[in-house]
Image (spheres, rainbow, N blue to C red):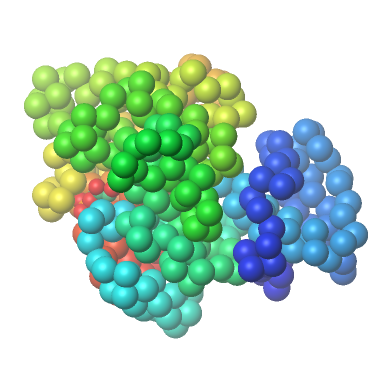
Length: 323
Ligand code: 13P
C-alpha cells in the first residue's frame, strides 16, 4: 500500500470519486487491480487503471478518517511565519524518518493545523505521505462573497488541506462563534469533502459547578446532531477543557477518560454504538511529551490536539511516538 502514495500534482480532486465508505473497510492491492471492501455499501469494486489505483490509494487514506484512528494533531494557533512553519514540518518529517511511528497510516495519522498562509506549502511538503494531513484552524460559515478577510472551505480545499478545526474555545470566546455558526461551518466542511475536527470543552467554573457533562453534551448536540449518521461518521471530536489549554495543567488521564466515555455514550444514544465506536475523540489541553503516553493509553482517548508542544519538533515527534 505504502508503495503507491499518489501526488496531488497528478491532478486528482478529492471528491471526484466520493465513495460511501462505511463498516469494516479493508483495502487490498495486487498488481494493477485494487479491491476495496466498504463493509457492505459497495463491496468488491475493482479498478484496473493504475491512475485510478493511485487515486484510490490516496483517497482511501483521506477517507479512512471516518474510521476510528489514533491521531496526533498539532494546532499551531497564530504562531510561525511561512518559513518557520515549513522548517518545523521538515524537522518533524525528518524526526519521524529517524524514529518512525510503530503504527502505519491504517492506524495512526499525524495532522498539522497551520495558519492559512502556510496551508499550501505545508500540503505540498506532505504530498504523497499517506500518514500526514494538513488542517486549517478555522473557515468561514458562508460559501463565498463579500466577507472581507474571511477564508472559505473551498479556498482551504484548493490548498490541498483536508481537515478544518472548528469551534476551538478560543474562537468561541474571542470571536463569539455561536452553536448555529459552528453547525454551518461543519456542514460546509462536509459538503466540500473535508474533515471537521470539532472542538468542545468547558471553562473551570462550569466544571466547578458540576455542569461540565451537560455543557459538552449541549455543544455537541447543538452543532453536530443535525447531521445524519453517515456525515456524523466523518467528524473527529476534540475534547479540550478550557482550564487545561495553555495552562500547563493537563487533565488527569482519569478526567479525560471519564469525559471521552461520556461523549461516546452521548453519540451512541443518538447514532448507535457502531457509529460512536468508530468516532475518533482527541484530548487537548497541555498535552506534552511526558503526559501523552498515559492520556493516549485510556480506552476512549484516541489521541491529542496539541498546541504549544506541537511547535517543537522533538516534542511533537515524541508525542506522535507515545502511541
Ligand atoms: P496547549 O497544548 O498549548 O494547551 O493547547 C491546546 C489547544 O488548544 C489545542 O487546540
